[in-house]
Image (cartoon, rainbow, N blue to C red; front, side, top):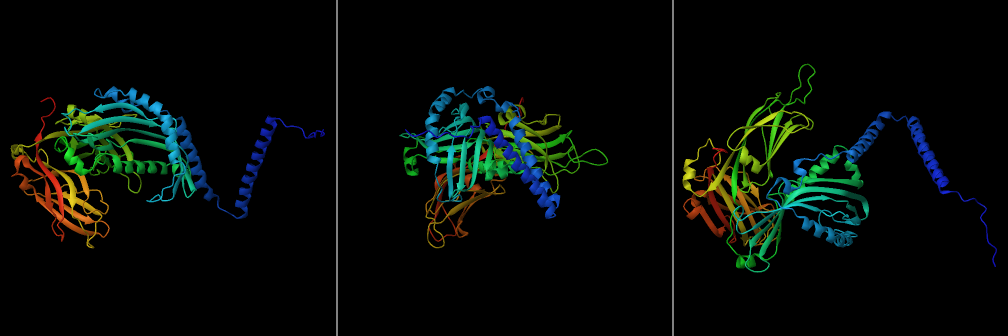
Length: 550
């Protein structure tokens, strides 16, 4: 037998080894600290250079601690949709299905994301690693399906109130360098799913459109290289940029379209003819504000402000003039927007104090559901207190609503005092045919649409196709249908050259049945090829809705 070798060194207990490590760390940190101080004195470095990094470090720690201990303020809008919207239904059965499917979906998505590399596009070389979508599934707080009298009979519209408070962890880097990570993503918003058109054969639906009704609430934590962007100031800018990109990508009227059948199959199997959206015109007049709290400090005298008002309805944003040095501004600012007849969405009025050379100061906000505005604030001035922890003043505004009518007498009876707009033009562009660029090849086409003095609208860029499918509706406010013209300018975005133009006089629609030009090809002018645009136009007139209670 081999003699046993005994270790004469005593076995240190676990507590002793832990204390030894802590003492070593303390010694190293103190040595580094005094070494840095000695270097500053040796190289005669001005101590002012240390103020900026130390200040940023303290602010970053403070924001982190504040974010961890801050208690959420529960608002009415944070409650489930079925509580404050009676026509929304609970969806616990969907949540039960999601909770059971989530472990399998989590494993599948984790396997797909890990070690995945993007091989084209702006993020070429981005590699995902150590990624997990989290153990907490999204929660459906309410579901609303619109009735046939609220939407077109050719579509099914579903609104889903979704809340995602995920413990996910997404780590990525470029070619395994510059590692950055995002974790604990929070998202709250209302997703609209539109199934259209309805078909008489499987799959029964031609397209699935997905979008947010209003910009969602988004929050997350960053780690790695991205942690640099989580300092105060930059953090807010990053989150605002992300929300703006979401708005441009999938907040109404922008949608994500998923076709289930081809356009030719859709036309053959279509259950009912295409119908335009059911719209109404909302005329908003912001009259004045009273009792505002000054945000500009004045050494001798009372504080004052330079207020202006921002009006938001869905993706439409309007801004009033700036009134200098007053706490009782009178704007008389008007704005006209088209909204869906179902009155989905919110009207937001925000007051800001303009500051030259720095960011503007927030002074107060009013948020009202469009249905509430329609029921209680139609056709008469309304004064509402601005939201905040303490009294911030009042804002006075007036709204008018107009139906869209096909009676020419409503155009003749319209008064300029009611609104600047007299009619609405709805255009559905189906496709383009025989488009070629200056080299005789398929262009990268974009359509620019304009009607009278209304805002210019653009289609998405169509990638290298002679017969691109547009399949989009565009709506325009018309001042004078007797003289205004509708034009479509086609452009090749690659070579920055014109592909032609289409002109339609709105007076031509006044002589057509129901003031409508049914789907037909329109010849593209100023082009050598026989290019055409297939589209349908509908002209409707404004009919004022009586004020509430009259």
